[in-house]
Image (cartoon, rainbow, N blue to C red):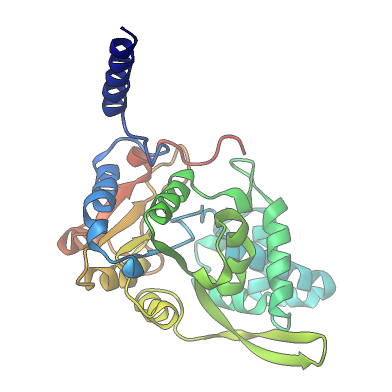
Length: 328
């Protein structure tokens, strides 16, 4: 009798175990075709890829974290320029310093953002010129940890998207080596990504600002920032070049949010191994910010280009169950 009861209990356990649903690897995503594409790729294609070749690359601004009304790099640059003005008000004769003062007061000031294109790079390059890069990293971290997004009342450094953080964790759980490849300066990435993502610096590939080493025997080396970059910048095909320089391999998984990420999409698509690429479309004006998937030169036919190459579009409005962490 006891044996019969134990057998029945065992059978009940097996049936229950087999019929219980699998854990949802992406709970902050809605159950949409795009989510299914990700899960199908990881479940059915990734086992065909050698572990050493499981490389995933993600853009940062607008892909992993909010980039509106300003992005991390520009928020920090505005503060750096305003610090200079505080010491020398004559700098306000230069338009970029006037822009910085306006953006400090209102990051959405359209009297700046509607026509500041040629000033963006000079603002970033000059905000911390002459600083040791590590001082820039620490300054940016401290500022972004405390400054708030005025629309959502979240510290800027915490404005990473939970669905994307889940996706990174999902890939890592399937033995992916994950890198963040951003057009923002590498020092800026060093300030915000290690805490938010748990990434070491060698997995953060940013645009490299030119710097000059200054050696202090027995006390270390300063890397003094200069107002230019080591080319190419991390944009368009420059992303592919810098991925190759840094990793030495092509990714099989790429995720961005603008046409400036197509260089790394092309690199992934050219990989003979199974591969997939996604672009996040900011189409949710209610929960975040709505804007077109390009910076600079308009590309109205972007959807056609995505379709021709077999790349996938993730809709923030349709595919994200959560946009920001409500607890923050």
